[in-house]
Amino acid sequence: MTAPKFILNLIHKYFISILLTLLIMPVKKIISSTILSRFPELVHGISTKLGGKTFFYNNMSFKVGDDEANVKQNRERFFGSLGIDQNSLAIPEQIHSDNVILADKPGYYKNADGLITRTPNVYLIISTADCYSVLIYDTSNKAVGNIHSGWRGTQKNIVAKAIDLMGNKFGSKPENLAVYIGPGISRDNFETGYETAEMFEEKYSVKRNGKFFIDLKQNIIDRLNISGVKNSQIEVYPDCTFDKKDYLHSYRRDRDKSGRMFSVIGMRG
Image (cartoon, rainbow, N blue to C red; front, side, top):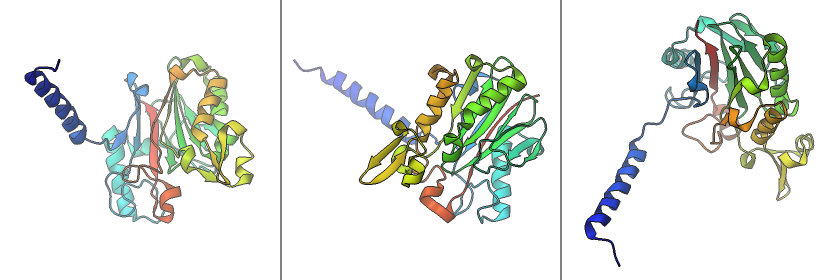
């Protein structure tokens, strides 16, 4: 028995409506986390490739060869959208280490790939273009962390060290943390040499057609779990930087034409 024609028409219109909604749905210029957005005292966001001028587009770094005026304009637009004064930024040098530093005031922090603070109106910055940013919020003691977790930092367990430091400095406990893992390169696109692959446990290193591929994202998640942070406290950005050519910067994909994204987190005063 077939359904009445008017019912089929309704179903057809319903699915057409959903399709049109998806097609016209605006793409976010700034990525935000659902888990972190639950806390009104927090300000956070991750820039994307949208905007700016070719060929670096919405690049946030002065170190990639982009026009300085373009970078300044991109930063003004990004931080202005979030209501952040650029004089309140704390920026680590990012040397691919496992060094995490307390940032109790704005400024430039040498020899660091992660910053933590419980000082309001100090906004922690991480720059990425395939590496992962890991944004951490202690919901009990009101403290934040922002971690640059590339393959070297991930292998050295920088995320766990950041959690330990937050515990030592602020009394943070893993069960009170909310964590957002930002965009990064996926296992399928992160090809490495044998020397790099052998530094990781076999479960994170896949050999395919004589090539090695490393799963940084799962490694970070597992390190968080070992530190006591449950999966229910972790949100992970789903897409790969390499795959999202029109949306996310990727050094592995674009090389010397790649810009950088900023991840920022901080607490309002």
